[in-house]
Amino acid sequence: MVGSFLNVLVARLPYEKSVLWPGSRCFSCFRPIRPLDNLPIVGYLRLRGRCRFCKAEFSARYLWVEVGTGLAFLGLFLWDVVFNVHGLPGARYEPVGGNTAPSAVGLAVFGYHAVLVSCLIAAAVIDAGHRIIPPAIPFTGALVGIVGGALMPWPWPHPAAEAVAPTAAAVAAGFTPAAPWSLSECWGRIPVGVQPWPFWGPLPAWLPAGSWKLGLVNGFLGALAGSLVVRWIKWLFETGFGREALGLGDADLLFLAGAFLGWQPAVLSLFAGAFAALLVFKLPAGVVGLFRGREFERELPFGPGLAVGVVATWLAWPWVGPRVQFVFLDLRMLAVVVGLVSVGMLAAGLLLRRKDDAPTPEPATR
Image (cartoon, rainbow, N blue to C red; front, side, top):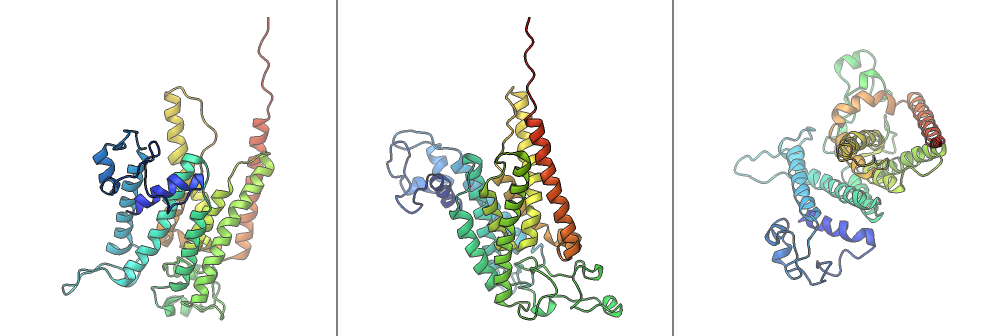
């Protein structure tokens, strides 16, 4: 059912049409689709992908978005509730004493993440087809992310007392929870909650762990950092390249991710998304085009790859986070990495611009 609604967003938002009115109808004969024909997946298969009245073909995208959304929700429920891979206390589905319902904690975690996944699916499908990401999707989703973060602030559902729990060996070595979290004694000690990490550590006294204020700040700073990192990379690369290379819709998509996940996963998602876009989407398309004799297309929609990068970074954060902790929570190291990436992006743009501007050799004449 959610996938069916996402299909409405995909079909109408690129053309700035209302998603509430009119009801579902054929785009060829404009006759309303009957309720039974509009059932997710079943309706498409019953009609064999055609309008009941004029026999116009419906895009197979309708079927695959519904199937893909259902599978994504199933996988997310298994990840968050059934197996509770991140080890969130109280989230795992454990029927005891005849109780066969998941816990409220598990449903809250699943529902919060399901909104993020739904927005990513809709944005990725639209970007793949139209090379745009309508602002209504990331901005509405970001609002849900920020409000949800305030209601479920880090380290929830962990108790606030577990914000930083140093080991006995670390305490014996002189470590205290007020020490900088970039120290090796702290690596892997930051509990991962619904909001994976706080924006910084140790936390200031006016933003205690588990407070709605911390959740609100996490969401706002995450959204801001996600948007700014894309805009910064875009400006650097385009300054060197000499023309537009990234769309601002990608900045809006990381704005959405940062509102749910905080600024550290959002920033890392940009680079994971670039890898996914090239390896998962561009390389197979290039190989298929080569065998079919098509010219290699240099441009690609970045939204699908960025969505994959966001999900991969978020799901892997309990293992990725400790390995990048010394960068994200140390100002000097962070400044060095930002400087190196900035110089690299500017240099890459200049090199590609030089290659692109190379004069085409004149054809030989007799």
